[in-house]
Amino acid sequence: MSLNENWFTEANEETGTGFSLKIKAKLYEEQTPFQKLEIYDTETFGKLMILDGCTMVSTRDNFLYHEMMSHPALFTVKAPKRVLIIGGGDCGTLKEVLKHPEVELAQQIDIDEAVTLASEKYFPELCESNNDPRAELKFIDGIKWVAESAPGSYDVIIVDSTDPVGPALGLFSVEFYQNCFNALSEGGVLVQQSESPLTHQTLLKEMHTAFKEVGFSDTKTLPFPQPIYPTGWWSCTMAVKAGQAEAFRETDSTNKDFKTRYYNAGIHKGALASPPMFADEIGI
Amino acid sequence: MSLNENWFTEANEETGTGFSLKIKAKLYEEQTPFQKLEIYDTETFGKLMILDGCTMVSTRDNFLYHEMMSHPALFTVKAPKRVLIIGGGDCGTLKEVLKHPEVELAQQIDIDEAVTLASEKYFPELCESNNDPRAELKFIDGIKWVAESAPGSYDVIIVDSTDPVGPALGLFSVEFYQNCFNALSEGGVLVQQSESPLTHQTLLKEMHTAFKEVGFSDTKTLPFPQPIYPTGWWSCTMAVKAGQAEAFRETDSTNKDFKTRYYNAGIHKGALASPPMFADEIGI
Image (cartoon, rainbow over all chains, first blue to last red; front, side, top):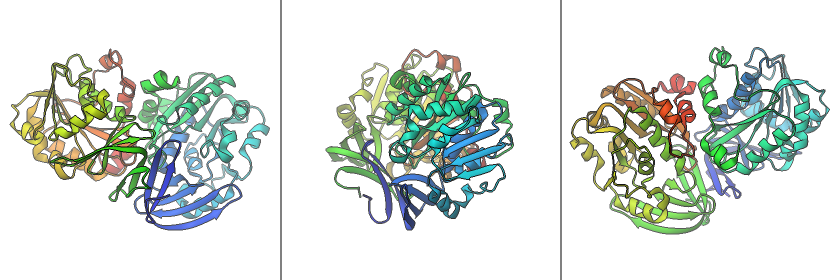
């Protein structure tokens, strides 16, 4: 379903919302072993990657998501040396993670290599750190990888997945969160994309409850804009193994020696300032 | 153009984006002397008001816009006694303004009475303060009203208008801003809806330049989520007659004795924390 042949549309029956981008051409289509992958060239948003009909990445607005999925979590950890990214096959989160000089290892575990191959071709700017000696890309099952990780293996785990349906469903389970908790170091942080604060409030509540249930000491949902996702208002949710999710290395963030377009220390603090509806209506 | 008869779609050729809401029924349609007004009942966003094909207000998400159009500006002024709203015919901004106990007069000047009549019927919750003795609703030309206002008449002027095309074009002009400047008291603040920080950067730059040109001492764009507007990422821009736009009554905001769903002092500070792209790419 789309407006006409000049538009790509993601219409979501559950949220009753639809988002469309005007397209110049479809550049690529593939049924991978895991999902249907499409690439479009759009009129105003650059390239657009679609997985199973859902918008994943556009050239124009992906910086919002990738910066917010990485920098708040990495500045929350005292020394983010070992980082695990589950999903994230477009490599945009990996690129942001590797901007942190403290990082010694950044593993990206995405089940679908086709996503990374397409990203290397159509979003080369997101893949520019793939050959960083600290980067390690594996195309295997992330759920199994975390379950088999030695305790305390990682300082940050980033779950950069598709929506909680199909292949990503297991990434929103208590069992997976328990394995993440075990795989994290003492001061470690888990951060997961957590959908729209307006239309996915039940999921948000369930995530906070599950994070606490497996032992995380504090949790926090950070909202941010993401135009190509349903409602344009998106979020990530952090869970810290010890201490407070609001405590971050503010001085290091203020003095960071790498460039960002959306993230800075003030945006970080602003994202931590939960709107009243979070407590009053969602109970988070 | 819409997905099919079950969806309302606003497709914007300029931004190359479209937003759709699933509808149950069209409830009302009228060609007013100024614009085409439509009301829909949607599946998930409550009622929806459309003006000339553009989404204006939905039951579900209008709180984001109305709170951010009013509370930051009113908490920036020392004593917001006299408030002028230009546009704002749905009365949602008026309702938020009147939550401030310091307000003695809140005038809403919208050229099109049909908007307010439709809002009273389909969005009664936005109109619940219309009979407040401090409220004054006039259906006349706001541009002329401001031009003829005595100097220093208002502490806050809120320009809550449609896009800068058609009837609202004059609300984005240097002459109008000059008249607003004159109509404001010494410590007064002008705030205007300023479109999307992602797709309307030229307009934002022009607004800041024009505000400075007519004499405002400082300006600031505050972004916020607004799902039904193009890109879902919207903004208002404040111009202060004297002092800094970032200085606000934080203690009063923290201790406010009225309820909000999105706005609080932390959200206010977060909205003031311009992302790096504002300076680097827009020059604001």
